[in-house]
Image 1 (cartoon, protein in one colour):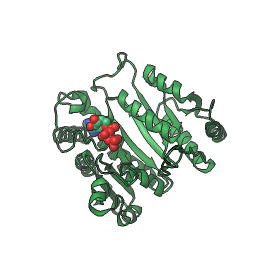
Image 2 (tube, protein in one colour; image 1 turned 60 degrees about the vertical axis):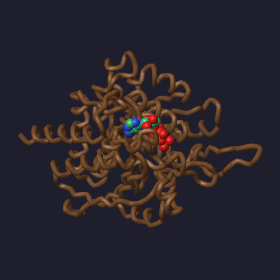
Image 3 (cartoon, protein in one colour; image 1 turned 120 degrees about the vertical axis):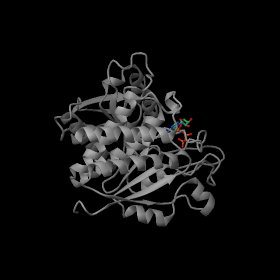
Image 4 (cartoon, helix red, strand yellow; image 1 turned 90 degrees about the vertical axis):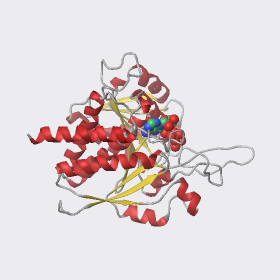
Length: 369
Ligand code: ATP
């Protein structure tokens, strides 16, 4: 592909604040594209989500999936709405469907504290929190979704397969190795409950086997209960951790809490062929429509998309655009007199977005000098 060939980005704006933060992220991504040059993205909006289900009976229309499958990457706001339920009483979750459909086994959840964020822990600020949770996203306790209860008992089966776990561990070790090259400790911690569950002992045994191919990466184990304790006590001690789906679902929210909340937590769901980038948060029914959502998680998810595409296509311009967005958020936070509501301020989404774009312009002008 020549640099002139546009990248096709499928966009699911979703529901509630998903739509609001997507608009903000699109503006920041476009500005970074304009400033850096050397690549072009064409965005295509696709319907999906709870309101789509209410209006059409489909939460993830086949035509949307077909278009998304042709894209170079997928950007997703957040989908779901408490009052709109499927026949079994659960919420509409096309984002989970996409993970299964596209085999997006590696849920990457960076947990990075930006100076300027009101600290959550008393000792925060002395040592930076900067670690990544890799949440397996296609099996584990989510594998039996939709099995439904009978009148007397409900069961869910936790599934760990060798095929997916090998891929997951390879992904984790590679990422920890790349982080080592970039000056981080380069340690992959296997988070499990191998003392109780045979499925988890199996998970750990595959971590051990795959780890033999990555002698440069540090190895460590933690039971999930101990990890939830240590993530609060000493979160700066961790680098990259890999875990089963449900554990990752819970610990990534704990991680988001450590860095200022869901509005600060980006994510990527990555498979061999496809990748979806979305904030870790939901649709914020309690704040939707008021224009106060924090757009940073979505903006940083967009930066993750640029980095992923840049690495995949070996296009340094995309990687530079990702770095520029990260630095712009860092600069905005460091100077932020005007924080969004979830960080204790009262700046609306549009103002936060403008300030991030202003920081991006300033950085870009400095770099040009
Ligand atoms: P879901 O059930 O789909 O996860 P939710 O929005 O109820 O959706 P979370 O995303 O976990 O659940 O959000 C928890 C709280 O954090 C809610 O009060 C929500 O409004 C708030 N929140 C989430 N994302 C943001 C954001 N980007 N900006 C501000 N507040 C947010």
